[in-house]
Image (cartoon, rainbow, N blue to C red; front, side, top):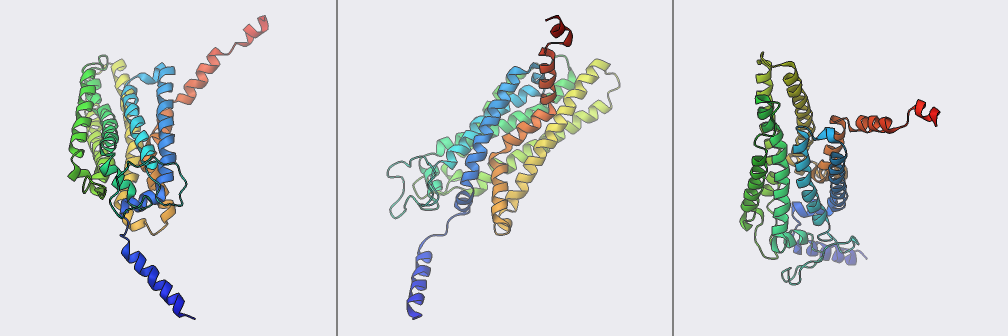
Length: 331
């Protein structure tokens, strides 16, 4: 009676030995593609809400608010990239999620659409330019946030002429994003090959999405902020009005540094220990990594609302528009 069970077990083991072990990216995608879709969609909505709020409330447009505006434009496109990746393929045949069609003839012989690595194959063979553009947009958003601290030097030099050199900021960000896209467009950098069997280079991907933003913002921005703070502490000739303007910008930049430093620090720690924690609390950890990867604009928008006191501003604006008691009595 036990022979049929043993035979089926041997057949199952031989079947699993015949199939190639899915890559780490495929395992992460299979577990978190729905979370990437949800957080990417929420990030798109929050980026749009930030743009609308920026248009409605003129007070939030002061430095460094305008740099945050342009970073949100880049974040909007990068978040749309996470949504596209989440819709690119279904990680299993039983998954009924809507997914983008794969180009005909993409997959090599013997690889089915329910192969766990099918998303990597599709990105490397057909969607690499689009995927690179998403990574370049993410780099552009990080560059704009870094420019908040470069602009501190301008504010320190003359707080009444903060528009000096602003057109150069746009050129610098576009150039940095273009160079990043050019570096990643090389197939050997981002993918193992350009045909249907290519897989993503996880080291390049994590450097682009995690480690480079962390180094740019935390180390680069933190160093620039510390330099300007030291200069202000030794500046005894500032007039009160110029000192107040500098203090406001410094306060906002410090809060942004703490906000993004916490987000990027948690993201860096999670990716650095990804292999360690994939088995311990796998579900919760995967969801946390997906939220920090695709949902940073959501947390940034909430932090932006608090830093700029948007709820208080909206409340004050509503009270100013409400008719006074005397006016109501006259009516």
